[in-house]
Length: 485
Image (tube, rainbow, N blue to C red):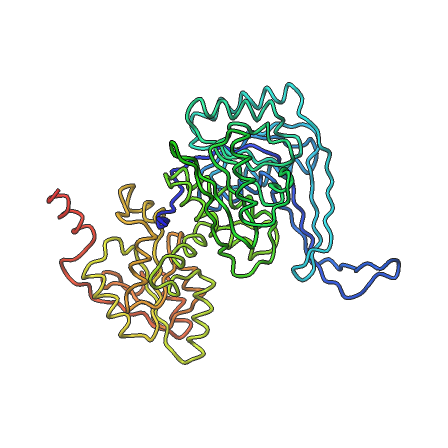
């Protein structure tokens, strides 16, 4: 796999589909109702979230992928809430048309177990005026898109006429179109670049039971040929995924089985949304369909370990990819992982050191500093600026190497016990969470200008300023390379 570069900030996805409002009601069950043999749920909390195609957009936003959504919201309170949730997502542009009622799915949950789901919805085809408005919006936004997603939840927002219009328009300008299908009539998706049904949906349109991998593969070939699609990707829960890629001239493509990356499955709600979002964002960055599917499979493995229609953040995915590909996977950590390790190390009586930086082109000055850090502590965690945070203060031409490569290299050093990617302008949140015993920074700072110094000192720790090795810096290295070039 070639997955280390997963920056999606230069991608642009156009998404259409059914907007739903998901309601999650959490509580505890301690008795059975005297009125009927049903559990009594005592509510602790509840919250609302975007569902359906809205969850696809949530995932794209969490990945840092700019997205335009075109769709329908109901003329009701649910529609207003959906609009607020959608327009508040970072890097999302929403073009919404008000019509009908907003579908609402309410899930009642106790101890991570879903007890009941209640659907309040009316399936209706949009009016001719709304379909016309949707078509016009597509033509307005299509030129800036790199890929189009149709997220069909069978609620009426994607009638056959509109689907075919979007597919034809997208193909005419060379933009791939990915469809998450619904129902048994796939003719509306004919000509799409890629279909992404789950195994149950594939089984529903297959003339025979899907008892084996070969059955699944044969059904995929039939769907691909019948509906003139370039490729088919089937999500299969605990079995992972199966990809039927586009055929090469005079050859037939063979299905590729991708094992699941999930360690423990808690909830598959919305996993398909995570898959199509990650897949589309990856394709936008120029990844092959197989590599994009591998990346989507890793993302799916993360999201099914969460409860509810959750999303996968860019940093989560970055860490998971590094763990999948790194020569030192246990060193790549989320903040949650690092906090757990910090507590464990402190209980063992070990001193925890912390430093941060870009570590763009690793040079002797970096090694000098990291060696001095490790000599002054038992365990060293390095916080690494993400690509986007570096661009904010060093300009568009930096970093030279992506965050994935930089983290990979740091994790391979014997001086380093943990690497955390961080997006914020400063590592203050990390320092407050980890409470290191020693905070390291270069001697070009003073203690009163070191971010987090007061936090560490109030906690009984100390700040250590390290002398810089003269003549070594990434900027100087870049200048030398330019002169050579």
